[in-house]
Image (cartoon, rainbow, N blue to C red; front, side, top):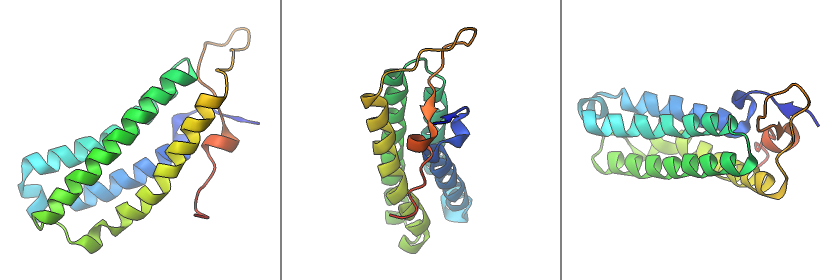
Length: 148
């Protein structure tokens, strides 16, 4: 099993990045962009998902990485609520949230699978001369969930 060497190889990060791009499209809409607080909150929450995955990947143990994944998932929940508020304020139409909902339908199971993997496996010990780093098996962490 080949290990992921960079957080950008993880499917959860790739999906988080797609969500971030979709959020930026929405927050650029004139009504949304004019509400600086709502725009900032949405973008901060979207950024937080990917940033916590990236930060967690650099942790030295699976337990530490899992903690950051849980924070990332909570940021995604926060983003969902912010977008619901934007819909209530009529900054976005329900149909404009569809791409994010579809991506969310994929990322939540990806979070669960990666968390289950981290919790069920010991942290690998580094090879001689390597610095300790959480190495994640690609078969578990990079598995594409498009078949869902």
